[in-house]
Structure formats: structure tokens, C-alpha cells
Amino acid sequence: MEIQKPSSPQFRDSVLLKMLVILVIAVVLLMPSSWIQGLIMERSSRQQEVINDVSDKWSGSQLIQGPVLVIPYKKQVIKRDTANKEVVKEYTETLYLMPENLFIKAKVNTETRKRGIFEVGVYKSLVSITGNFDRADLAKLQIDSSSIMYDKARLVFGISDLKGLSSNPTIKVQNQTLAVDPVLNNGDMLDNGLQAAVNLTTVTGNQIPFSFVLDLKGSEALNFLHTGKTTQVEVNGNWPSPKFDGRYLPDTNHIDQKGFNAKWRMLYYNRPFPQQWAANDGLLNSLKLNKNALFGVELHVQVDEYQKTMRTTKYAILIIVLTFVSLFLTEVIQKRKIHLFNYALIGAAMIVFYTLLLSFTEHVGYNLAYLISAVATIALIAWFTASLLANQKAASLFALILSIFYGFIFIIIQLEDLSLLVGSIALFIIVAVLMYFSRKISWD
Image 1 (cartoon, rainbow, N blue to C red):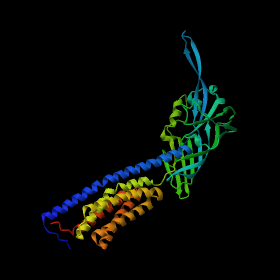
Image 2 (image 1 turned 180 degrees about the vertical axis):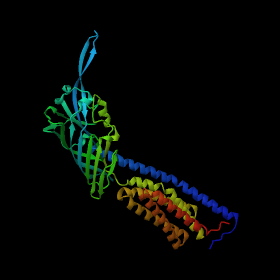
Image 3 (image 1 turned 30 degrees about the vertical axis):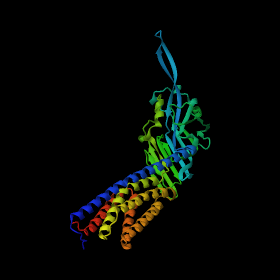
């Protein structure tokens, strides 16, 4: 049954004017919602500042680079002096070798550090590194074997934040146990380089085995550099939501509430640098900048709370418009006029919902904060509309409509890959329902 209204231009004009003013109110309410988005960004930046500060004091994200075997050799060059006589000049060049096989096994134990209302994930790890170098193919490099200074070789590796070392590492190369020193002049070396002097004249066989263990602290991420001709890495940890990052994804991984296990196996075909080279110090320096050789695990927060809250505020205009349309239809069907000022107050209550959501999220998490904020907002608006319409049944129906709207937004926020599909279908249904009830109004 249609609700008949007086057929007069005055009625039509008043209804259209009111609809226009309601639309203006909805648009005006976008201003405070944009302010709230700025507040969310400010709080998120504050969280990142806390993370950076804790990481700086504990130890930052760690990148294990190397190892690389560095062997000096003598090179002679014939030049002519001012008298046009040939003079033999000798200087030192460097030969670089990457591991033939590189095996890394890391055990990551995480803990949470709290600063005010913010929490930061840090970790302690034991990283076991073993492998071997093959002797250099000197013929391929056109280097005379007699010029190699095997007694002055060095094994070099790098750690992005040396502050994270909890103990002094020692390196075993075949039958030698070597102390580690920092690379003081590392302009052409790896970041925060460490080195161990090794006498290769005592090494027998064609392979040069090595092993060492790093007792390492860090935060946010643990990454590795693919330096072996064959590189195999296994990482175990108790973090329930890791993110595997970098150039290579793990071949196998398992994640549950107790933690994770991930394994990588890579061949040198995927590497952006050679197995051995000579006289090009800059190439070693470029390895630390080459993201095509990096991979690892990030201690990823499964869904960032501020990101969820920001996404929620972006639906503010949708919620406000749908609520105003529903209220307007309720007003017309119930034949009870609602003043425009009351529309503005209801819109203000829906804006306050987002400040409640942000403040509660920082203390109890997004899901519970959304429930508290939505229930409080719906209860307030339902009580207000009940007093305006003098109809408890209509107010309860309107509260149910609001609950559907807020529930719809919550579901969309939880979804990622399917959010567009689900949101589009739900919006289609909502528009269809509004079209159905709008048929009860005679606009003539």
C-alpha cells in the first residue's frame, strides 16, 4: 500500500530541498572524518617511531652477508720510464671466491618489548653457517699460481647491525680456529664487515671447508645474501605470523600458532654475480646493494591495527549516506518529521564512532574495539530515534539496519582478496532493498 501525500509542488519542493540539505550535511561530515584519518596516520607514525627507537637500542633488522674468501696476489706490469726503458712494476690485486656450498640454519626466538601502549617484536637467534670453497680456477682468471699469497688470505662476512652480536664469533677453516676482527677500511667490503685471517698454505685438498656460529640479536627481520653456488637455508622460529620476503620464496614452509619452519635451496644461476672474479673491488661492494640476491623472513604483524582503522574510516561517507537515506525513508513512512539538526547530531555520533574505534584499538585490538564502538553508537542512535519518532518498533528496526551496515563494513575489512566482490554484492542488495521501500512513497 502506498503512502499518499498531497499532490502539490510545495510538497515536492520541500522533500527535494530536505534531501538536498541532508546530502550537504553528509558531505560536510566528511571533513571531521578526514581529520580522524590524519590522527590515525599520526598515531601510526608514533608507533613506527617507537619501533625504530626500540630496534636502535636492541638491534635492527639483520642481514647476514657472505662469507667471501679474499686472496691477494701479485701482479706485474711492464711500463716505460722517462728514459723509455722498460720497468717492471709490481702491485697487489685481490681475488674473490664465493662458497661452492653454503648451508645456513637459524633458530629464531622472539619476544615482545613494550613501550607505553606499543609493542615491538624482537628476537634472539643462533645462526649456524657451514660450507666450503673450491680452489680458484686460476687458468680461467689468467693468474699465475706463483703470484698467489695464500698465507695472507682472509674470510670476510658482514652483519647489518654489529650491535646485535651477543658473543665473539670464531671461524673454523679445516683444521684452523680463527679469531674475528672488524674490517676497518671497508669501503669496498660488505656492510659492517668482519674478517678472519686464514693461512691457506696449510689447507689440503681441493676444497676449503668452513664453519661458524653467530649468536645474534635483531628485530623486525632476518635476511640472508645468496652467495653460494648452492645455497641452502633453514629458519625455525616461534613467531606465528611470519612474512617471507626478498627475491626468493622458500621451497617449503609450515606456519601454525606455535611458529614456523621455512627452507630455501637456490642455485647460482639465479645470482646476479659470478662465482669468482679478480681485480674488481667494487663488485663486492655492490652485492650489499643488490636486492636480487636478498631473501629472508620478516616478523610480520598479521594485520596492522592502524591500517584496519584507516580502511574503516574510508567507508565513513557510505555509512553516513546509507544511514541518512534509511532515516529519511523511515521518517516519510512513519509520517514523523525529523529536524535537519537531528540529522546532523546522528551524523556526529557516527563520526565519533571512529574516534572510539581508534582509541579502543590501541588498547584492546581492532576486533573488540569495533564491537564496543559499534554497539555504543548504534545504541545511542537507536535511543535518539526512538524519542524522535515516538515509536519503539521503528527505532528497533532502524537499529537493526544500522547493525547490518556496521556488520557489513566489518566483514569487508576482515576480507582482503574477496573484499571487492563481497562489498559489491552487499551494496547491490542494500540498494535493492532501499528501492523496494521507496516504492511506498508517492512523489506525485
